[in-house]
Length: 578
Image (cartoon, rainbow, N blue to C red):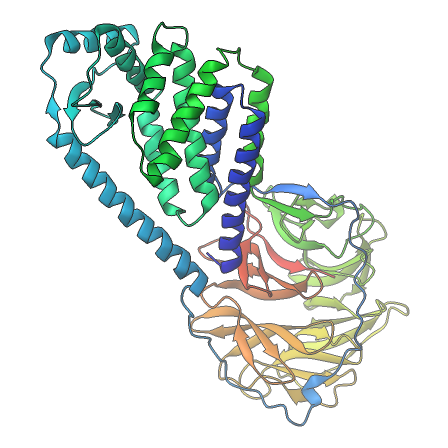
């Protein structure tokens, strides 16, 4: 868990308990509603850790088109640049904040364990009541209240008021010095048996666990006090009409001295119960029970996002186009860059592969294979105006739009070797940029539209190079003894994201062209074909990830390097963004 995720969890838990305290005042006449409310509140630490789907909270105004405020620079021509060996960052281990919270929780669990052991010893040391009349009364009331396992009745000098202990084998503990008449004993035992019927001992075990995990949070302490009070008041209201019950409860408050801590959870607790009885038994306010459920809302995962309404004529900057399969056939799909709403594009794109989006989002370039050859096509996003751009008897693949949307750079096998080509969409003509037979692949544009980055075998291994549009000005960007492919520039030209075949797998890698620093983004993930792409204003990277046997579209946020798989089901590959 990252520090930001931990802080979010802790804040949500605090919000839930704060909301619980506020709603407790509103729900004061309805003890049953408050009991339900606090059950939800103490369940919140578990709910926030569950893999629940996010609850999307749409913002009112969608983001505008991305506008680059910086003039793209050609950092690789800086004379200080030297391609460095990859700098694998050591695993920093858990963040200090995570360790601190885990340590505090560990201390709380130790205290809880010690208290549980001490209570268990107290229960075992208590003497079993041998009064036959009381034992018969316990069995009689247990059958009346449908308590499956009749509890054992024990007496102890270490307690000051009756209580119930245990989940599987319950025990009713009473003070050894307590002297009551038969009617009073009946009321005391009925009270404890009602707690058993409502499973309050199990409920309080969970409440105590949450309280000790978050013992440093005063809201949890206050919540525990209100939760226990609500449990008692529900039972009190059930017995409020019984003669002598209010007097019995009031006598316990007057007669029992309380130390400082016990006053907080003891005498004030009993005074609250007496006030409830003094008000009389009021009918429950059923509508308020629905209000109590509102405490659950803040613990649901949520994120603020713009409404996602795909435009059939245009791909937005917050979308990704990729190749997936439907009925065994390749097809182009679109979805939001956060993984929402994958949708197939027009049937025109059945059989299409390697998509690329035009800068204005209205056109797609892609390849189509037939009769052992591949050709390059463009079409509008809605599938209209499809036309062939490059068609040779060989394979023509990997088209990429220029920043002004007027040209395509691509790869072709027209000479029998992989070469880089450049097509002009206005004239329909194309030409070679390289013609040296050195396996030149995966060309993409520099954001200034004047240079190209590509992978080439010209130095004996497939590394990344850049060049001008006429093939001049060659600069080697990577110089490892491994394969580096699929380079893509950031909008300002400083960073290059690419796929590097190290340690027997492809790794998405980020290169700072100004300093030469290289950092693998997700070192333990395997890329299927190596394609990567910047997204969301260069704040994230889309990639094809393959942990097992099937490829999926994944996202890495560059702010915290969080990795998320966005697709499931059929294999998905070749993500393309604007």
